[in-house]
Amino acid sequence: MTLSAALTALLVCVAVPGTAAGTATDDPTDPGPVYKTVTDKNGLLSLQTNGRPDGRDMVFRISGSVYANIEGNAHDPQLRHGQKLFNLEGYNIRRLYRVPGTTQLYQLSREIVFYTDPADPTKILREWKNPIDLKTYPVVPINNDAVNFGPFNVTPSYVGPPMRKMHDETVWTSDIPVRTDFKTSLGEQFGLVNGVYAAQEMFDFYVDDREVAVRTIAGTVPKGAMKTKISWSRTSPWAPFMCLPETDVRGQLTYHARSWSLPSYLDIEPWLRAEIDAAHPLYKAAPTEPGPSENSWTSFYNKQLGKGATTWTGWCAANGKA
Image 1 (cartoon, rainbow, N blue to C red):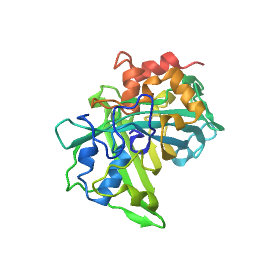
Image 2 (image 1 turned 180 degrees about the horizontal axis):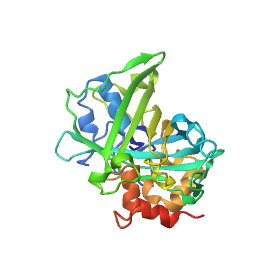
Image 3 (image 1 turned 90 degrees about the horizontal axis):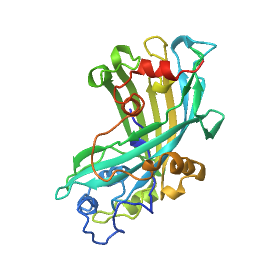
C-alpha cells in the first residue's frame, strides 16, 4: 500500500544524532549495539535495507512509471489498456531506531513520490484530466508521514529472509498481498468495491557481492548506507485523486519502478530537492520516534478529506473542473 519497502538518502545537515562506525555513543536509540550482535549474513543484509546500522537517516530514491491496466480494454479510446499515465519520481527517507533499554528495533520513515509528466519525468504534474468524466483534478503526490515498521526483536539468533546468488549479486524477494477494509476502518469507501483496497506489492532486492563482503562482518557496524538496488511493482486501484470509482470504472493501475540507495539527501537531483525545500520540507528527515503510519489512502483521507470532514465523493465534486 505504500512504497515503503523500496527507498533512501542521508540528510547530513539535519541527521538524527549518531556515530561513525566503531565509536561509542550515549544515544539510547542507536541501533549499532544491537546490530553488532547479529551473526546471520542474511539478517545483516536485510537490516541494512531498513536503515543504516549507525542510526542516521538514509534514503531510497524511486523512479518509474504508472500504466492503465484495463480488463478487456473496456474504456478504449478514452482510456486504453497499457496506456502510460504518469512517470513516478520521489524517495523514502528512513532510519533504524532502537527502543531504549531493549533489543527491539523500528524502521522509521517518511516517503514522498510525485506523479510526473509521462513524457518528462522531471515535470511534476499539478493537474490531471480524467478522460472518463472530462474533468480536471489536482494531482496529489504520495506523501506518507510516517511509514513505520516494528518493533522487531534483534538478538544474536536474528535471521534474514531466504536469499540466492544471481551472477555477482545476492538477491531476495518480498511479495505482499494487501487487503484493507477502509469502509470499516475509516468509514470511507473511496469508490472501492465493498470499500476494500486490494493490491499486490512485489519487491526484488539486489546487493553486489563486493558490497556483501564488506557489510556482513559480524560484530562490526558498517559505515553509511548499503548500496542496494530494488525493483518494485504494484497493481492497485485508481489513485484517489483520479476520481475514478473502481465500482464503476473497470481497471486498475500498474506501477513499475526502480529504487536505489544514495549516500546523502544532497545527492538527490537538484530539481527534486528544490520541490522538497520549497513545498515539503518535512520530508527532508525521517521521524525521530515511533508513531502512527500512513499509506497513500489514509494520507489522502487525513490531508485531503480532513479526516472525514468531507467524503471522497464530495472532494471529487468540489475539485473537478469542467
